[in-house]
Length: 537
Image (tube, rainbow, N blue to C red; front, top):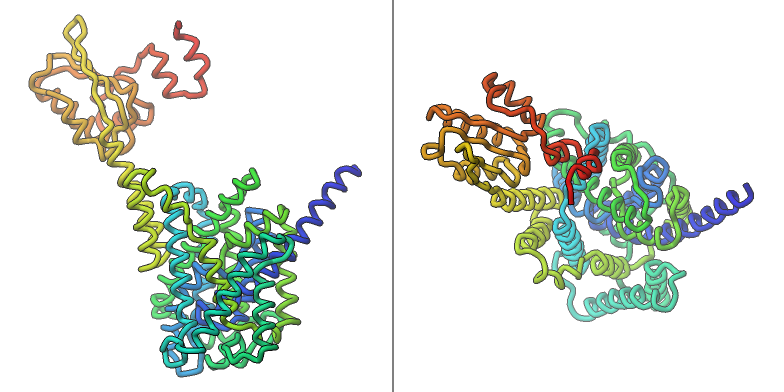
Protein backbone atom coordinates (compact mmCIF):
# COMPACT_ATOMS: atom_id res chain seq x y z
CA UNK A 1 0.00 0.00 0.00
CA UNK A 2 2.84 2.39 0.86
CA UNK A 3 4.55 1.58 -2.44
CA UNK A 4 1.30 2.27 -4.32
CA UNK A 5 0.89 5.69 -2.64
CA UNK A 6 4.54 6.55 -3.25
CA UNK A 7 4.23 5.81 -6.98
CA UNK A 8 1.03 7.82 -7.19
CA UNK A 9 2.64 10.76 -5.42
CA UNK A 10 5.61 10.64 -7.79
CA UNK A 11 3.29 10.70 -10.79
CA UNK A 12 1.33 13.58 -9.31
CA UNK A 13 4.52 15.56 -8.83
CA UNK A 14 5.52 15.02 -12.46
CA UNK A 15 2.04 15.92 -13.67
CA UNK A 16 1.96 19.17 -11.65
CA UNK A 17 5.43 20.35 -12.71
CA UNK A 18 4.80 19.43 -16.34
CA UNK A 19 1.40 21.16 -16.23
CA UNK A 20 2.95 24.42 -15.00
CA UNK A 21 5.52 24.31 -17.81
CA UNK A 22 2.80 23.70 -20.39
CA UNK A 23 0.73 26.61 -19.02
CA UNK A 24 3.67 28.98 -19.49
CA UNK A 25 4.08 27.80 -23.06
CA UNK A 26 0.33 28.11 -23.75
CA UNK A 27 0.15 31.87 -23.06
CA UNK A 28 2.15 33.19 -26.02
CA UNK A 29 0.71 30.72 -28.51
CA UNK A 30 -2.90 31.32 -27.43
CA UNK A 31 -2.37 35.07 -27.89
CA UNK A 32 -0.58 34.57 -31.20
CA UNK A 33 -3.28 32.27 -32.60
CA UNK A 34 -5.92 34.80 -31.58
CA UNK A 35 -4.07 37.37 -33.68
CA UNK A 36 -4.02 34.90 -36.57
CA UNK A 37 -7.80 34.52 -36.33
CA UNK A 38 -8.28 38.28 -36.08
CA UNK A 39 -9.87 38.31 -32.62
CA UNK A 40 -9.04 39.68 -29.17
CA UNK A 41 -6.18 37.75 -27.48
CA UNK A 42 -8.44 37.14 -24.48
CA UNK A 43 -10.68 35.06 -26.77
CA UNK A 44 -7.73 32.77 -27.49
CA UNK A 45 -6.74 32.56 -23.83
CA UNK A 46 -10.29 31.70 -22.75
CA UNK A 47 -10.42 28.97 -25.39
CA UNK A 48 -7.11 27.51 -24.22
CA UNK A 49 -8.32 27.47 -20.61
CA UNK A 50 -11.79 26.00 -21.16
CA UNK A 51 -10.92 23.46 -23.84
CA UNK A 52 -7.77 22.41 -21.99
CA UNK A 53 -9.68 21.87 -18.74
CA UNK A 54 -12.66 20.01 -20.20
CA UNK A 55 -10.68 17.68 -22.46
CA UNK A 56 -8.21 16.91 -19.66
CA UNK A 57 -11.05 15.76 -17.43
CA UNK A 58 -13.30 14.01 -19.94
CA UNK A 59 -11.05 13.31 -22.96
CA UNK A 60 -9.95 9.94 -24.22
CA UNK A 61 -6.20 10.55 -23.96
CA UNK A 62 -4.68 11.42 -20.56
CA UNK A 63 -1.63 13.64 -20.94
CA UNK A 64 -2.78 15.25 -24.20
CA UNK A 65 -3.08 19.04 -24.19
CA UNK A 66 -5.79 20.94 -26.08
CA UNK A 67 -6.33 24.64 -26.75
CA UNK A 68 -6.50 27.27 -29.47
CA UNK A 69 -4.55 26.10 -32.53
CA UNK A 70 -3.22 27.55 -35.76
CA UNK A 71 -5.00 24.95 -37.91
CA UNK A 72 -8.36 26.32 -36.77
CA UNK A 73 -7.25 29.95 -36.57
CA UNK A 74 -6.37 30.17 -40.25
CA UNK A 75 -9.91 29.07 -41.18
CA UNK A 76 -11.51 31.51 -38.74
CA UNK A 77 -9.89 34.53 -40.41
CA UNK A 78 -12.33 34.69 -43.32
CA UNK A 79 -15.28 33.78 -41.07
CA UNK A 80 -14.60 36.71 -38.74
CA UNK A 81 -13.91 39.08 -41.65
CA UNK A 82 -17.15 38.14 -43.45
CA UNK A 83 -19.11 38.38 -40.22
CA UNK A 84 -17.72 41.85 -39.49
CA UNK A 85 -18.71 42.99 -42.99
CA UNK A 86 -22.33 42.09 -42.21
CA UNK A 87 -22.53 44.56 -39.31
CA UNK A 88 -21.65 48.16 -38.74
CA UNK A 89 -18.05 49.24 -38.13
CA UNK A 90 -16.86 48.47 -34.61
CA UNK A 91 -19.77 46.15 -33.86
CA UNK A 92 -17.52 43.05 -34.05
CA UNK A 93 -20.38 41.00 -35.43
CA UNK A 94 -17.84 38.55 -36.81
CA UNK A 95 -16.83 37.59 -33.28
CA UNK A 96 -20.38 36.54 -32.41
CA UNK A 97 -20.69 34.60 -35.64
CA UNK A 98 -17.47 32.88 -34.59
CA UNK A 99 -19.00 31.90 -31.24
CA UNK A 100 -22.09 30.49 -32.98
CA UNK A 101 -19.88 28.58 -35.42
CA UNK A 102 -17.81 27.09 -32.62
CA UNK A 103 -20.99 25.89 -30.89
CA UNK A 104 -22.19 24.21 -34.10
CA UNK A 105 -18.70 22.80 -34.59
CA UNK A 106 -18.88 21.19 -31.14
CA UNK A 107 -22.28 19.65 -31.90
CA UNK A 108 -20.88 18.08 -35.08
CA UNK A 109 -17.89 16.70 -33.19
CA UNK A 110 -20.12 15.19 -30.50
CA UNK A 111 -22.20 13.53 -33.22
CA UNK A 112 -18.97 12.06 -34.60
CA UNK A 113 -18.29 10.59 -31.16
CA UNK A 114 -21.84 9.23 -30.79
CA UNK A 115 -21.59 7.60 -34.23
CA UNK A 116 -18.15 6.21 -33.29
CA UNK A 117 -16.38 7.80 -36.26
CA UNK A 118 -13.12 8.32 -34.38
CA UNK A 119 -11.79 4.95 -35.54
CA UNK A 120 -11.65 6.19 -39.13
CA UNK A 121 -8.54 8.23 -38.36
CA UNK A 122 -6.64 5.01 -39.03
CA UNK A 123 -7.57 5.46 -42.72
CA UNK A 124 -5.33 8.54 -42.98
CA UNK A 125 -2.09 7.43 -44.72
CA UNK A 126 1.29 8.66 -43.51
CA UNK A 127 1.99 10.80 -46.63
CA UNK A 128 -1.28 12.63 -45.92
CA UNK A 129 -0.17 13.32 -42.36
CA UNK A 130 3.19 14.66 -43.55
CA UNK A 131 1.50 16.82 -46.17
CA UNK A 132 -0.89 18.12 -43.52
CA UNK A 133 1.85 19.31 -41.16
CA UNK A 134 3.84 20.82 -44.02
CA UNK A 135 0.84 22.71 -45.36
CA UNK A 136 -0.12 23.85 -41.88
CA UNK A 137 3.40 25.19 -41.28
CA UNK A 138 3.30 27.14 -44.55
CA UNK A 139 -0.13 28.61 -43.74
CA UNK A 140 1.00 29.76 -40.28
CA UNK A 141 4.14 31.30 -41.79
CA UNK A 142 2.17 33.22 -44.42
CA UNK A 143 -0.29 34.45 -41.81
CA UNK A 144 2.55 36.03 -39.83
CA UNK A 145 3.77 38.11 -42.76
CA UNK A 146 0.82 40.44 -42.17
CA UNK A 147 2.47 41.51 -38.91
CA UNK A 148 5.20 43.18 -40.98
CA UNK A 149 2.68 45.62 -42.47
CA UNK A 150 1.50 49.02 -41.25
CA UNK A 151 -2.08 50.24 -40.90
CA UNK A 152 -2.19 51.05 -44.62
CA UNK A 153 -1.25 47.51 -45.60
CA UNK A 154 2.28 48.42 -46.72
CA UNK A 155 5.33 46.44 -45.60
CA UNK A 156 7.64 48.06 -43.06
CA UNK A 157 10.72 49.81 -44.38
CA UNK A 158 13.89 51.32 -42.94
CA UNK A 159 14.56 51.23 -39.20
CA UNK A 160 11.05 49.99 -38.42
CA UNK A 161 11.69 46.87 -40.49
CA UNK A 162 15.18 46.32 -39.09
CA UNK A 163 14.01 46.58 -35.46
CA UNK A 164 11.13 44.19 -36.15
CA UNK A 165 13.42 41.66 -37.84
CA UNK A 166 16.02 41.99 -35.09
CA UNK A 167 13.51 41.27 -32.32
CA UNK A 168 12.00 38.36 -34.26
CA UNK A 169 15.42 36.82 -34.85
CA UNK A 170 16.41 37.34 -31.21
CA UNK A 171 13.24 35.55 -30.08
CA UNK A 172 13.99 32.65 -32.40
CA UNK A 173 17.65 32.51 -31.31
CA UNK A 174 16.69 32.26 -27.63
CA UNK A 175 14.12 29.54 -28.34
CA UNK A 176 16.71 27.63 -30.37
CA UNK A 177 19.64 28.02 -27.99
CA UNK A 178 18.06 27.80 -24.53
CA UNK A 179 17.11 24.08 -24.73
CA UNK A 180 20.76 23.31 -25.52
CA UNK A 181 21.77 24.89 -22.21
CA UNK A 182 18.86 23.71 -20.03
CA UNK A 183 15.54 22.04 -20.64
CA UNK A 184 14.09 23.08 -17.28
CA UNK A 185 12.97 26.50 -18.55
CA UNK A 186 10.17 27.04 -21.11
CA UNK A 187 12.03 28.58 -24.04
CA UNK A 188 9.00 30.39 -25.49
CA UNK A 189 8.27 32.21 -22.23
CA UNK A 190 11.92 33.08 -21.60
CA UNK A 191 12.28 34.45 -25.12
CA UNK A 192 9.17 36.62 -24.73
CA UNK A 193 10.32 37.92 -21.33
CA UNK A 194 13.78 38.84 -22.65
CA UNK A 195 12.48 40.58 -25.78
CA UNK A 196 9.76 42.34 -23.78
CA UNK A 197 12.35 43.60 -21.29
CA UNK A 198 14.51 44.95 -24.12
CA UNK A 199 11.54 46.80 -25.62
CA UNK A 200 10.31 48.19 -22.28
CA UNK A 201 13.65 49.27 -20.80
CA UNK A 202 15.02 50.32 -24.17
CA UNK A 203 11.91 52.41 -24.76
CA UNK A 204 11.62 51.07 -28.30
CA UNK A 205 8.71 52.27 -30.41
CA UNK A 206 7.32 48.96 -31.61
CA UNK A 207 3.87 47.40 -31.82
CA UNK A 208 2.75 45.53 -28.69
CA UNK A 209 -0.23 43.35 -27.89
CA UNK A 210 -1.94 46.32 -26.26
CA UNK A 211 -1.34 48.71 -29.17
CA UNK A 212 -2.40 46.04 -31.64
CA UNK A 213 -5.71 45.57 -29.82
CA UNK A 214 -6.33 49.31 -29.58
CA UNK A 215 -5.48 49.83 -33.25
CA UNK A 216 -8.13 47.23 -34.04
CA UNK A 217 -10.76 49.11 -32.05
CA UNK A 218 -10.44 47.14 -28.82
CA UNK A 219 -9.98 48.44 -25.28
CA UNK A 220 -7.11 46.22 -24.26
CA UNK A 221 -7.01 43.06 -22.21
CA UNK A 222 -9.25 43.01 -19.19
CA UNK A 223 -8.61 39.87 -17.22
CA UNK A 224 -11.59 38.15 -15.63
CA UNK A 225 -13.54 34.93 -15.56
CA UNK A 226 -15.19 33.90 -18.84
CA UNK A 227 -18.70 35.33 -19.12
CA UNK A 228 -21.73 33.72 -20.74
CA UNK A 229 -22.19 35.45 -24.10
CA UNK A 230 -25.86 36.43 -24.05
CA UNK A 231 -25.24 38.77 -27.02
CA UNK A 232 -24.99 35.72 -29.29
CA UNK A 233 -28.77 35.37 -29.19
CA UNK A 234 -29.42 39.05 -29.93
CA UNK A 235 -26.71 39.70 -32.52
CA UNK A 236 -26.79 36.42 -34.49
CA UNK A 237 -30.19 35.67 -36.07
CA UNK A 238 -31.05 32.00 -35.71
CA UNK A 239 -32.44 31.36 -39.19
CA UNK A 240 -31.61 29.42 -42.34
CA UNK A 241 -29.47 32.24 -43.73
CA UNK A 242 -27.20 32.10 -40.68
CA UNK A 243 -26.99 28.32 -40.90
CA UNK A 244 -26.02 28.51 -44.58
CA UNK A 245 -23.27 30.99 -43.65
CA UNK A 246 -21.77 29.28 -40.60
CA UNK A 247 -22.58 25.67 -41.57
CA UNK A 248 -19.68 25.10 -44.00
CA UNK A 249 -17.23 26.80 -41.61
CA UNK A 250 -18.49 24.68 -38.70
CA UNK A 251 -18.14 21.49 -40.72
CA UNK A 252 -14.61 22.36 -41.85
CA UNK A 253 -13.55 23.39 -38.34
CA UNK A 254 -15.06 20.23 -36.84
CA UNK A 255 -13.21 18.06 -39.36
CA UNK A 256 -9.91 19.89 -38.84
CA UNK A 257 -10.28 19.76 -35.06
CA UNK A 258 -11.02 16.03 -35.00
CA UNK A 259 -8.31 15.16 -37.52
CA UNK A 260 -5.63 17.10 -35.64
CA UNK A 261 -6.84 15.81 -32.25
CA UNK A 262 -6.94 12.17 -33.31
CA UNK A 263 -3.59 12.42 -35.08
CA UNK A 264 -2.10 13.88 -31.90
CA UNK A 265 -3.78 11.13 -29.88
CA UNK A 266 -2.12 8.49 -32.05
CA UNK A 267 1.25 10.21 -31.62
CA UNK A 268 0.90 10.28 -27.82
CA UNK A 269 -0.19 6.62 -27.91
CA UNK A 270 3.07 5.72 -29.64
CA UNK A 271 5.20 7.76 -27.24
CA UNK A 272 3.58 6.37 -24.08
CA UNK A 273 2.94 2.86 -25.45
CA UNK A 274 -0.66 3.08 -24.26
CA UNK A 275 -3.95 3.44 -26.10
CA UNK A 276 -6.43 6.29 -25.96
CA UNK A 277 -10.15 6.25 -26.71
CA UNK A 278 -10.81 8.04 -30.01
CA UNK A 279 -14.59 8.20 -29.70
CA UNK A 280 -14.42 9.54 -26.16
CA UNK A 281 -11.98 12.20 -27.37
CA UNK A 282 -14.46 13.22 -30.10
CA UNK A 283 -17.16 13.64 -27.46
CA UNK A 284 -14.89 15.65 -25.16
CA UNK A 285 -13.64 17.91 -27.93
CA UNK A 286 -17.21 18.56 -29.05
CA UNK A 287 -18.49 19.29 -25.56
CA UNK A 288 -15.54 21.58 -24.87
CA UNK A 289 -16.16 23.60 -28.02
CA UNK A 290 -19.86 23.98 -27.26
CA UNK A 291 -19.10 25.39 -23.79
CA UNK A 292 -16.25 27.51 -25.17
CA UNK A 293 -18.52 29.06 -27.78
CA UNK A 294 -21.09 30.04 -25.16
CA UNK A 295 -18.43 31.53 -22.87
CA UNK A 296 -16.47 33.61 -25.39
CA UNK A 297 -13.70 31.32 -26.63
CA UNK A 298 -12.51 30.85 -30.20
CA UNK A 299 -12.67 27.06 -30.13
CA UNK A 300 -9.77 24.67 -30.41
CA UNK A 301 -8.48 21.12 -30.51
CA UNK A 302 -5.47 19.07 -29.44
CA UNK A 303 -2.08 20.77 -29.70
CA UNK A 304 0.80 18.66 -30.98
CA UNK A 305 3.55 20.92 -29.63
CA UNK A 306 2.15 21.33 -26.11
CA UNK A 307 1.26 17.65 -25.88
CA UNK A 308 4.86 16.74 -26.68
CA UNK A 309 6.12 19.24 -24.08
CA UNK A 310 3.85 17.61 -21.51
CA UNK A 311 4.83 14.03 -22.34
CA UNK A 312 8.55 14.82 -22.39
CA UNK A 313 8.16 16.67 -19.08
CA UNK A 314 6.77 13.54 -17.42
CA UNK A 315 3.07 14.41 -17.62
CA UNK A 316 1.09 11.22 -18.14
CA UNK A 317 -2.18 11.66 -16.27
CA UNK A 318 -5.19 13.95 -16.47
CA UNK A 319 -3.78 16.04 -13.64
CA UNK A 320 -1.12 17.55 -15.93
CA UNK A 321 -3.74 18.99 -18.29
CA UNK A 322 -5.90 20.22 -15.41
CA UNK A 323 -2.95 22.01 -13.80
CA UNK A 324 -2.02 23.62 -17.13
CA UNK A 325 -5.55 24.94 -17.62
CA UNK A 326 -5.92 26.26 -14.06
CA UNK A 327 -2.53 28.00 -14.19
CA UNK A 328 -3.54 29.59 -17.49
CA UNK A 329 -6.67 31.00 -15.81
CA UNK A 330 -4.49 32.45 -13.06
CA UNK A 331 -2.40 34.20 -15.71
CA UNK A 332 -5.58 35.61 -17.27
CA UNK A 333 -6.91 36.90 -13.93
CA UNK A 334 -3.76 38.45 -12.57
CA UNK A 335 -1.33 39.03 -15.46
CA UNK A 336 -3.44 40.43 -18.31
CA UNK A 337 -1.81 43.86 -17.96
CA UNK A 338 1.62 42.33 -18.42
CA UNK A 339 0.50 40.46 -21.54
CA UNK A 340 -0.43 43.80 -23.15
CA UNK A 341 3.21 44.87 -23.00
CA UNK A 342 4.45 41.89 -25.01
CA UNK A 343 5.89 43.03 -28.39
CA UNK A 344 4.25 41.66 -31.51
CA UNK A 345 7.73 40.79 -32.78
CA UNK A 346 8.17 38.31 -29.92
CA UNK A 347 4.93 36.52 -30.82
CA UNK A 348 5.93 36.43 -34.48
CA UNK A 349 9.25 34.87 -33.47
CA UNK A 350 7.42 32.25 -31.40
CA UNK A 351 5.15 31.45 -34.35
CA UNK A 352 8.11 31.15 -36.72
CA UNK A 353 9.65 28.61 -34.36
CA UNK A 354 6.31 26.77 -34.28
CA UNK A 355 6.48 26.72 -38.09
CA UNK A 356 10.00 25.26 -38.02
CA UNK A 357 9.00 22.67 -35.45
CA UNK A 358 5.78 21.75 -37.28
CA UNK A 359 7.21 21.32 -40.77
CA UNK A 360 8.21 17.70 -41.52
CA UNK A 361 11.72 18.37 -42.80
CA UNK A 362 12.30 14.64 -43.13
CA UNK A 363 9.89 14.68 -46.08
CA UNK A 364 12.69 16.13 -48.24
CA UNK A 365 15.00 13.21 -47.38
CA UNK A 366 12.47 10.54 -48.26
CA UNK A 367 11.09 11.98 -51.52
CA UNK A 368 13.37 9.76 -53.60
CA UNK A 369 12.85 6.74 -51.34
CA UNK A 370 9.05 6.41 -51.39
CA UNK A 371 6.68 5.50 -54.27
CA UNK A 372 5.84 8.27 -56.73
CA UNK A 373 2.17 8.06 -55.73
CA UNK A 374 3.06 8.87 -52.12
CA UNK A 375 5.18 11.83 -53.27
CA UNK A 376 2.21 13.15 -55.25
CA UNK A 377 -0.09 12.74 -52.24
CA UNK A 378 2.36 14.49 -49.90
CA UNK A 379 2.82 17.47 -52.22
CA UNK A 380 -0.88 17.66 -53.12
CA UNK A 381 -2.00 17.70 -49.47
CA UNK A 382 0.57 20.40 -48.64
CA UNK A 383 -0.60 22.56 -51.55
CA UNK A 384 -4.32 22.05 -50.88
CA UNK A 385 -3.83 22.94 -47.21
CA UNK A 386 -2.35 26.28 -48.28
CA UNK A 387 -4.86 26.95 -51.07
CA UNK A 388 -8.03 25.74 -49.30
CA UNK A 389 -7.92 24.24 -45.80
CA UNK A 390 -6.86 21.18 -43.84
CA UNK A 391 -10.17 19.30 -44.14
CA UNK A 392 -10.29 19.50 -47.94
CA UNK A 393 -6.59 18.64 -48.16
CA UNK A 394 -6.84 15.55 -45.93
CA UNK A 395 -10.01 14.29 -47.64
CA UNK A 396 -8.40 14.77 -51.07
CA UNK A 397 -5.25 13.01 -49.89
CA UNK A 398 -7.21 10.03 -48.57
CA UNK A 399 -9.17 9.81 -51.84
CA UNK A 400 -6.00 9.93 -53.96
CA UNK A 401 -4.37 7.27 -51.76
CA UNK A 402 -7.48 5.08 -51.97
CA UNK A 403 -7.59 5.38 -55.76
CA UNK A 404 -3.90 4.49 -56.03
CA UNK A 405 -4.44 1.51 -53.72
CA UNK A 406 -7.43 0.37 -55.78
CA UNK A 407 -5.50 0.71 -59.03
CA UNK A 408 -2.55 -1.26 -57.72
CA UNK A 409 -4.81 -4.02 -56.39
CA UNK A 410 -6.81 -4.07 -59.63
CA UNK A 411 -3.66 -5.22 -61.43
CA UNK A 412 -3.10 -8.12 -59.03
CA UNK A 413 -5.98 -10.33 -60.14
CA UNK A 414 -4.64 -13.58 -61.62
CA UNK A 415 -6.10 -16.79 -62.98
CA UNK A 416 -4.13 -20.05 -63.00
CA UNK A 417 -5.55 -22.41 -65.60
CA UNK A 418 -5.28 -26.19 -65.69
CA UNK A 419 -7.14 -29.16 -67.13
CA UNK A 420 -8.29 -32.18 -65.13
CA UNK A 421 -8.18 -35.71 -66.45
CA UNK A 422 -11.97 -35.69 -66.90
CA UNK A 423 -11.73 -32.69 -69.22
CA UNK A 424 -12.84 -30.04 -66.73
CA UNK A 425 -11.07 -26.69 -67.06
CA UNK A 426 -10.17 -25.17 -63.70
CA UNK A 427 -9.60 -21.45 -63.15
CA UNK A 428 -7.82 -20.78 -59.84
CA UNK A 429 -8.41 -17.11 -59.06
CA UNK A 430 -5.78 -15.25 -57.09
CA UNK A 431 -6.05 -11.66 -55.84
CA UNK A 432 -8.84 -9.32 -54.71
CA UNK A 433 -12.01 -9.21 -56.80
CA UNK A 434 -13.64 -5.80 -56.54
CA UNK A 435 -14.88 -2.98 -58.78
CA UNK A 436 -11.38 -2.09 -59.95
CA UNK A 437 -10.39 -5.61 -61.05
CA UNK A 438 -13.63 -6.64 -62.79
CA UNK A 439 -12.40 -5.95 -66.35
CA UNK A 440 -9.15 -7.86 -65.79
CA UNK A 441 -11.17 -10.69 -64.18
CA UNK A 442 -13.51 -11.03 -67.17
CA UNK A 443 -10.57 -11.06 -69.59
CA UNK A 444 -9.25 -14.25 -67.98
CA UNK A 445 -12.10 -16.41 -69.34
CA UNK A 446 -12.67 -17.81 -72.83
CA UNK A 447 -16.35 -18.70 -72.63
CA UNK A 448 -16.83 -19.78 -76.24
CA UNK A 449 -13.73 -21.99 -76.50
CA UNK A 450 -13.77 -23.48 -73.00
CA UNK A 451 -14.81 -27.16 -72.59
CA UNK A 452 -18.23 -28.29 -71.46
CA UNK A 453 -17.29 -28.33 -67.78
CA UNK A 454 -15.68 -25.33 -66.09
CA UNK A 455 -14.74 -24.82 -62.44
CA UNK A 456 -13.74 -21.51 -60.84
CA UNK A 457 -11.81 -21.80 -57.59
CA UNK A 458 -11.82 -18.69 -55.33
CA UNK A 459 -9.73 -20.12 -52.48
CA UNK A 460 -6.97 -17.51 -52.99
CA UNK A 461 -9.30 -14.66 -53.86
CA UNK A 462 -11.67 -12.47 -51.92
CA UNK A 463 -14.95 -11.20 -53.33
CA UNK A 464 -15.09 -7.68 -51.91
CA UNK A 465 -18.09 -5.77 -53.19
CA UNK A 466 -21.33 -5.74 -55.19
CA UNK A 467 -19.49 -5.17 -58.48
CA UNK A 468 -17.64 -8.44 -57.93
CA UNK A 469 -20.91 -10.28 -57.26
CA UNK A 470 -22.39 -8.87 -60.46
CA UNK A 471 -19.32 -10.00 -62.40
CA UNK A 472 -19.69 -13.57 -61.08
CA UNK A 473 -23.43 -13.51 -61.81
CA UNK A 474 -22.79 -12.32 -65.38
CA UNK A 475 -20.05 -14.91 -65.96
CA UNK A 476 -22.30 -17.77 -64.85
CA UNK A 477 -25.02 -16.56 -67.22
CA UNK A 478 -22.56 -16.43 -70.14
CA UNK A 479 -21.44 -20.02 -69.60
CA UNK A 480 -24.99 -21.27 -69.20
CA UNK A 481 -26.03 -19.38 -72.34
CA UNK A 482 -23.38 -21.42 -74.21
CA UNK A 483 -24.88 -24.60 -72.75
CA UNK A 484 -21.91 -25.29 -70.51
CA UNK A 485 -21.74 -26.38 -66.88
CA UNK A 486 -19.97 -24.09 -64.41
CA UNK A 487 -19.14 -24.68 -60.75
CA UNK A 488 -17.93 -22.16 -58.16
CA UNK A 489 -15.77 -23.32 -55.26
CA UNK A 490 -14.39 -21.75 -52.10
CA UNK A 491 -16.61 -18.69 -52.06
CA UNK A 492 -16.89 -16.97 -48.67
CA UNK A 493 -20.06 -17.45 -46.64
CA UNK A 494 -21.24 -13.86 -47.04
CA UNK A 495 -20.69 -14.03 -50.79
CA UNK A 496 -22.70 -17.26 -51.04
CA UNK A 497 -25.57 -15.76 -49.08
CA UNK A 498 -25.77 -12.80 -51.43
CA UNK A 499 -25.60 -14.98 -54.54
CA UNK A 500 -28.35 -17.25 -53.19
CA UNK A 501 -30.51 -14.19 -52.68
CA UNK A 502 -29.77 -13.00 -56.22
CA UNK A 503 -30.88 -16.26 -57.86
CA UNK A 504 -31.89 -19.74 -56.61
CA UNK A 505 -29.93 -21.37 -59.45
CA UNK A 506 -26.68 -20.62 -57.61
CA UNK A 507 -27.50 -23.46 -55.23
CA UNK A 508 -26.70 -25.77 -58.14
CA UNK A 509 -23.64 -23.79 -59.25
CA UNK A 510 -21.86 -23.30 -55.90
CA UNK A 511 -20.06 -26.31 -54.44
CA UNK A 512 -20.72 -26.50 -50.70
CA UNK A 513 -19.09 -29.78 -49.68
CA UNK A 514 -15.39 -28.92 -49.70
CA UNK A 515 -12.65 -30.84 -47.92
CA UNK A 516 -9.76 -28.38 -48.21
CA UNK A 517 -7.89 -27.07 -45.13
CA UNK A 518 -6.89 -23.91 -47.04
CA UNK A 519 -10.53 -22.94 -47.38
CA UNK A 520 -11.31 -23.45 -43.70
CA UNK A 521 -8.22 -21.46 -42.76
CA UNK A 522 -9.32 -18.54 -44.93
CA UNK A 523 -12.85 -18.63 -43.54
CA UNK A 524 -11.85 -19.18 -39.89
CA UNK A 525 -8.41 -17.75 -39.02
CA UNK A 526 -8.86 -18.84 -35.42
CA UNK A 527 -8.60 -22.45 -36.61
CA UNK A 528 -5.08 -21.87 -37.89
CA UNK A 529 -3.35 -24.44 -35.65
CA UNK A 530 -5.84 -27.15 -36.59
CA UNK A 531 -5.70 -26.38 -40.30
CA UNK A 532 -1.92 -26.24 -40.25
CA UNK A 533 -1.68 -29.64 -38.58
CA UNK A 534 -3.49 -31.23 -41.55
CA UNK A 535 -0.52 -30.47 -43.80
CA UNK A 536 2.35 -32.93 -43.86
CA UNK A 537 5.81 -31.41 -44.19
